[in-house]
Image 1 (cartoon, rainbow, N blue to C red):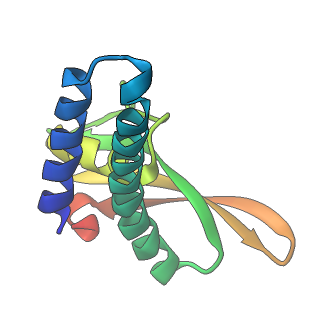
Image 2: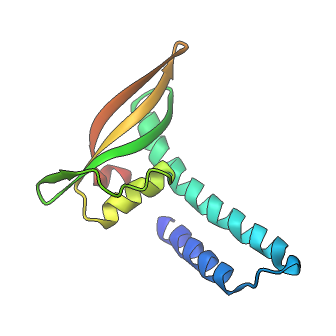
Length: 123
């Protein structure tokens, strides 16, 4: 399913570049933007579901750093993207491990938890 969503996402982005920016094309641009957004949310939901299965009340998460070739790196992680896309980005860079910081809301108290995961945990 992940590969199909990636193909849909890439096709939608390609199509958007081919559409002219004119008032009559605005509905088409809105539709394509929504398709791209939904594809991104689907990837995010899967990654967050994995975290929520391990820890209760996880509200959000982000990749703190990733491990490649014996080194921990934190450069260029796309933190503006949803968590699932951050995980996919790390996987594309050849990461074997990732440190994930989770925001957990328990008993009206917001706390952070950082844990190391194998990149294969999210596949």
